[in-house]
Amino acid sequence: MRGTGGRKARRFVVVGALVVAGALVAVPAGVRKTAGVDWVAGVDWVAGVAGVAGPGGGPPRVSADGPPAAAMTLPAPTGRYQVGTVALHLTHWTRTDPWAGRQTHRELMVSVRYPARAGAGRYPTAPQLSAREAAAFDARNTFSEQVPPGKVQWAATRTSAHVGAPLAAGRPSRQWLPVVLYSPGVGDPRSFGSTLCDELASRGYAVVTIDHTYEAPAVEFPDGRLARSVLATELAKAQKSGRITALLKKVSGVRVADTRFVLDELAEQGAASPLPPGLRRALDLRAVGMFGQSAGGFTAAQTMHDDRRIKAAVNLDGVMGYTQRDDDPSNPSTVGRDGVDRPLLLMGMAGNTHHTVASWGAVWRHSTGTWLRDLTLRGSRHASYTDAEALVPQIARRLGLPRKDVTALIGAVDPARAVAAQRAYVSAFFDRWLRGRDDGGLLDGPSGRFPEVQFVR
View 1 (cartoon, rainbow, N blue to C red):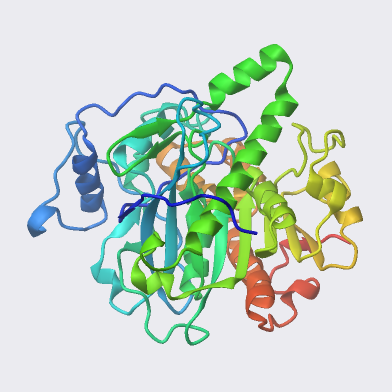
View 2 (view 1 turned 90 degrees about the vertical axis):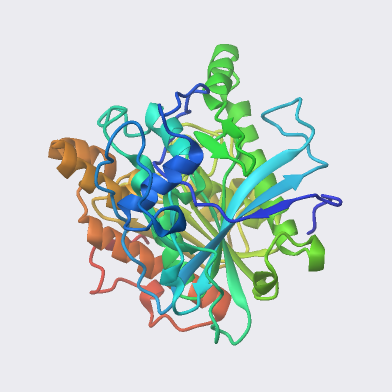
């Protein structure tokens, strides 16, 4: 079902992806700016950490704050392709921004990851956060109870995606790339799922990650504007007026509308398309899936319910009702009341199943005659389904965090095993339902390869 976006002026840009840390609470609207670092200097400084030369091949500039800490790293993807990325600035001119009421249009930043041609390593890797976005995240990140501001150089982390690298020749499926959309948790930037998104791109998918503007701590646009989160203010107003349920419904509705607009944009042809020519001819919009973590997982399932263009969805530990408690059956969503009629994979943290999470149970009961799986990653926590699984252990080693702080964030599951399991099951799911490929039965029952994964009956 198409939207009604009308003719849209847009700008195609190549910028770094954003990142990091899963949040179920809001981020304050006001953030401090890193002293002495402008956007360009911040990018060059990060490039130096990753071993990339500065402008003209010379040494990178260093910020006035002094030498950066060693960069944290994310697991390299395991697929046959290197990964390329471009970032797109999309404007929905006929939709008033729901979080900024005086703004008569809605602006989004999205990134597209894709299989890149051999030699993509000549192109710089995208940072998870620009310097200004990193400052916003650092001001009050979701690790703040264990990791106070100023302790981590968030902008120094690089993804595995190479900015502007050419699309792979001899692509899978001969011509068309299946498309997978990614939505992050509330309060998260779009690249908090970089590990899984890069993995899927390395296996031959086009992966489109969506920033939900005014939810993420900060979204930087190509002209330098920074859209900061308004959720702290919205949450305070909702608590004072007793309208938490209404706020949760609004968050979900905005996210679904964002996603459907992105699908509309991907389908534009010729000069109206926001994609570079090579990509606009390569996407298979008949084979579209979606996944997300926390509220992003809810977004994936709800968008599939609302829009026939989504053929399969993965919910990584996201409640699918308008409630703040897993076991609360009140205020169900339409996907909870109706269920789904296309494949849905649920992957939960330890203890979260369709027997214990009321909204999962509702979807399960009402989804008759379709393919469903409910998997638990033993020893995991909510943030295990994000890049926190790879980043937190590195932060802990550098800051000397006690083990109890680490397990509070990402649980007791071995991080490398958690990442491997998520890669295997999410990839197998989309391979089966978007490509029709045999996954060797991985999704049909317990596997000795992944004893950490429990199938919930």
